[in-house]
Image (cartoon, one colour):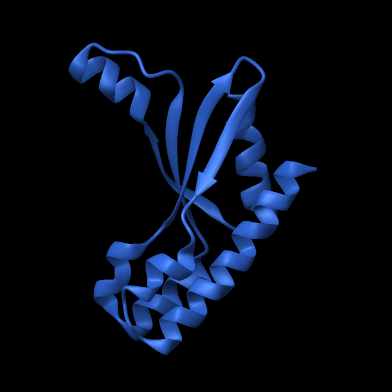
Length: 117
């Protein structure tokens, strides 16, 4: 929970909001009766970046938002992973959307740096 709070604060500092929060561990526990440890997927969105993508290619919305995975490593450590938005948005195959991917990557790198300090 503390890691989620820290990630949310770092995202908010970069003007990203959380548009989805999927507790994967709870879903697997409920559906399969198995434990995988703490594992959540947060969907982060920068509305200005998202609008640039949608204005260029509405179907590219399937590539949004920027998802971050929070997974518990041990009692004191939580990993925060995110996919490179440049790679994701390259699937749209347009230069304008590729530039959005570069901008989104820079934002997520700043989030990473905030969390590292």
